[in-house]
Length: 190
Image 1 (cartoon, one colour):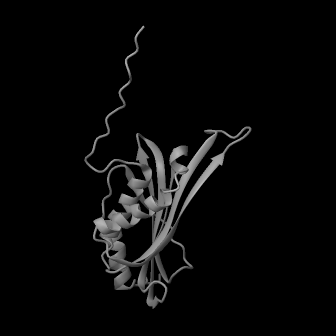
Image 2 (cartoon, rainbow, N blue to C red; image 1 turned 90 degrees about the horizontal axis):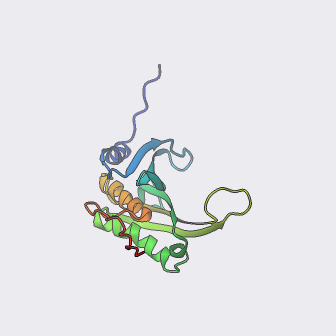
Image 3 (cartoon, rainbow, N blue to C red; image 1 turned 120 degrees about the vertical axis):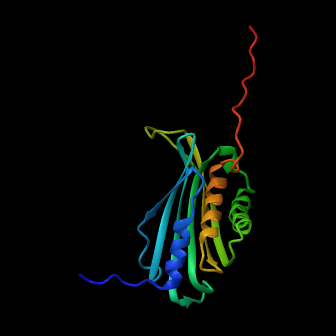
């Protein structure tokens, strides 16, 4: 039997940081197979965000490590994310949405003191209209956030918490500790 391959210390500590964080209860994390061709070492997580028992957003967070470094990354570690959520049609048509979506990420990183550099990404709004026999609402809208950044340290716990904050914002979850009150129905007179 072959001996297990020793992982570089930087990568092992980064993975340990990602595994050590416990997200809020609405966010379910699972380890998943990581892409093998992007870097010599990779680790990946998937997320499902639930609101009232329904999945309202999903995401992936991939950690890449190249011990030789990568010029575009400006370092040896890189985090890559993809987050998607369904939106109300009128919100998806808002021309300010991409800028707001980007600040969900950058504000989350800043709030968690998740040091980073070389950040970049795209925000995509899509609206789909169903016809014929396709099940589901006639019109559906989504937001997709694709981004990557280089962490400035090896402990990635704060980066995972920032990513979970991004997921919660994208899903429209209230901040932790805030309870959403049920809508009050107007009284009818008869």
